[in-house]
Length: 475
Ligand SMILES: [Zn+2]
Ligand SMILES: [Zn+2]
Image 1 (cartoon, rainbow, N blue to C red):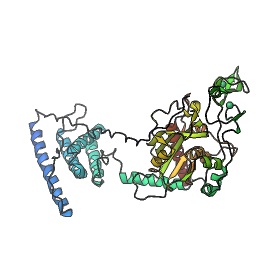
Image 2: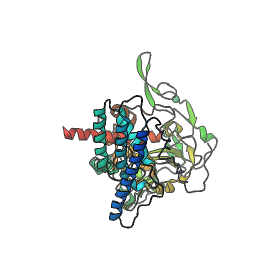
Image 3: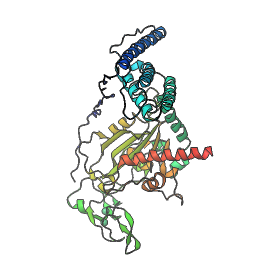
Image 4: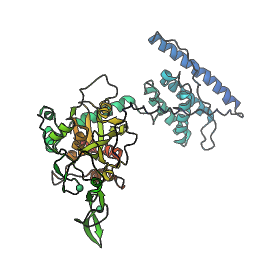
C-alpha cells in the first residue's frame, strides 16, 4: 500500500446550498364557463377577501407602526374551485368554504407573503380538496370544513418558509423544539456514570494531569501483532517483505451450520478455527493503554458551552473507523449525526503516522483519496457541534473517544444502556441490539461497517429506550 504523503490542508467547501423550489408552481385555474354566476361570485369573493387582507393589514400596522402594508408581490387571492365529477358537493358551497379558508391562510402566511405570494392560494386549494376527499355528503363536508377552519384559526402566524403546511401536515416548530429539549432532558437521566466510564475504560479528565512516561511500543521493540498474535519488530518504514509478513484471517469468527451442526469458522474463508490464515499483509498492532495513547497523540477536552453558537447540538451520535499506522491504530473516518439522524459530519481523516493498512474488512474504507482533514482540523469541525454539555451517543464509544483523542463525560453508550445479560466484560453487539430492539437488520453487507448506519442506529436505540421508560412511568 502506498504511504499517504502530507497533504495540503484545505478548508472544506460547504455543501452547495441546493435550493429546491419550496412551492410547486400553481397551475392556472380553469374558468368554469357554464357557471358564470359562480365565476362572478368568485370575483366578488376575491375582492372581499382582498379587502379583508387589507383591513387586517391595517390592524397589523397599528401594532407595528413602522410597517405599512404594501406587498412587493400581491398575494394571489382565493383559488377558483373547479367542479369535481367524483364528489357532488355544490360548487357554490365549496367556493364559499375556500374563500373562508383563504382568509385564514392569508393571515398565517402574511409574514412570508412577499416571497411566497401564491402560498395561501395553493394551500387553500389543497386544504379544500382534502376536506372534499375525506367526506361523502354535504353535512359531513360542512362539518369537516368548520373544524378545519377552527383549527387553522388557532394557528400562529408563520415564522418562516419552513413553518408552512396545510392543517394535518403542519407541525408546530415550538412543539418540535420542545420535544427535542424533552429528549435531551430525559437522556440526561441515562448518562453513563463516572464509575462506569472508568470500567468501560473511557479516557477521563485525570489523564490530562498524568505525567508522561516514555514507554510502550516504539520503533525497534517487539510487540504482539493484532492479527496473527505473534511478536514482531516495530519499524517506522516498512520494506517489501514487511508488507506480507503476516498470515491471518481478516474476518471475525462466526457460527455456521455445517452438515446440520453448528460450528465456529472464520468469516473470511469458512475455514475451521486454528487453521492457517487465508490472507497476507503487514503485521499490525494497537495500543490500549490510555497513557501511551496520550503520549503519542494528545487528548483534548471538548470545549465549554457557548450559548451564542447556533450550531452546537444537544445530542450527537458518533461513529469512527480506524486503520493501522506505523504507530498503532488511528482514526481514518468520522461520522457524526444529530438527534434527528441528520449528518453533521462525515469525513475521512489523515492519520499522523504512515498508514500500513486501512483495515478495509472492518472499516469499509478502501482509500483516503480526497481527505481534507487531519485529526486537529477534524476536531475543530466537530467542536462546532459538540461542547461539554452535548450528550455524545455511540456504541462502545470509548474506542471512538480514543481514536478522536477526546475527553468527554456526558456519554450515552448503548453498551451500558442495554447491558449484556451476563454483565461485563460481555457486551451486546450493535447488530444484535438493532435486531432485538429495533427489529432492524444492519451490517449485513461484506464491505465493513457503514458509520452512518451505526451512528443512526445508536440514536434510534436511545429513542426506543426512552420511549420504553416513558411507557413504564405511565403504567
Ligand atoms: Zn480466512
Ligand atoms: Zn501478524
